[in-house]
Image (cartoon, rainbow, N blue to C red):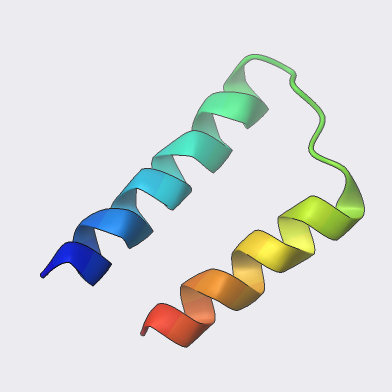
Length: 40
């Protein structure tokens, strides 16, 4: 259950960064993608 919440938080954080023009470095966004995949 906590894993699902964690995943939603990550996705929201990523959307927030996109909306506010905060540039995630390529490396960071890759790491987040991989992490989300691993949670699935």
